[in-house]
Image 1 (tube, rainbow, N blue to C red):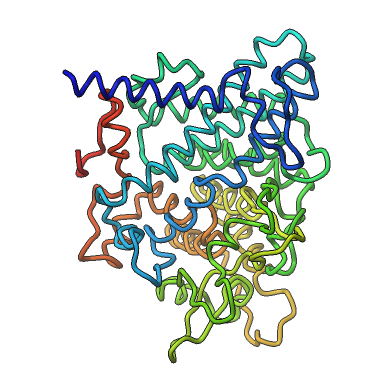
Image 2 (image 1 turned 60 degrees about the vertical axis):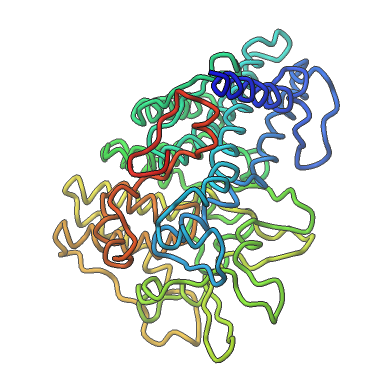
Length: 471
């Protein structure tokens, strides 16, 4: 009993600190914006301060642990990279997460994710209560907060399955929240994005660093594909593509630049002398340092001869007689000049969503045509290294072969981007087939969801653990 009381007191203290720092109407304003900081006590006293508060959430997101961690940890857990030096992350590389991994999962994913959910909830609550923010702006800013909340929730359910559905900043309710069925959370995400589609404008103000209507459509298309709602996914992705507001970048090496024509939604860099967390994570710090992560042999072998994505999105360094190949979608490590923004949504994914939806709907030829658009881009930029460009896929493929070709194309095109590969293996029920073969000694069938951090279970007695993990 004493331990339970102590846990509840500790949890209460944790939530109080969270609310004070992130979501009270007095202090929420102190979230830093990309340029400067707000200092007003009354965050939602007028249109300007309310807009700055939402800007602050974007600012924090760009340097958050969940954004920084999700790509390397998912890449290790799937079949994209290995860590060159031993660390707690070695457990991710063999897909066997123990208590040793729990603090990192808790800090980098769970706590970080829920931090933004609380901030979004607080903004939505305070906008609703505000008497001084204009009605039209209330809806616009609420839609942006809902977009951010939806993005984070989608990451959490793809990692952990059932998660607590937190919809307000009321710590007295949230401190004892049990896990909600993931389908309930998905329904909540869909509702958030439908609200965002209705109330967001069609174009961002200057750069693609705040959500607009097409950002929400693109994310909803992804979710509907994950839910096997293929007709809805096809319609949404088609609307984004046919809007003509985005275009595939001809040269793959320029896809991830600031304001790329292919980008639908990017994050503005807010750390001094840094462009993107992925550049910082994957690029060696000097000409003599070895890479932190190497592409797996299996992924390297998946590239076809002539695929410019291999030469554009990877780099190789010689070390002790070995050629070490590492990810390099982002080319900038440390510089104050902003030339790259982290891409969270881009047009090529929408083509692949439309392709997968069409194939599953029986429109195999249309699906293959979209895949071939991506393959064509991967070979058309001029390069003296390419003598035999990758061929287009035959329009005569059957449905099963087309889906396997689609899976391979997504693996290459979206490699080491925001966890796509692991999420794809999980949602298509291919994880056991693929990873049992690659990691026969360590892969377990229960590993398609990650463990709930033990720290959270100790704080909240209403949380349960995923099957097969520590208690």
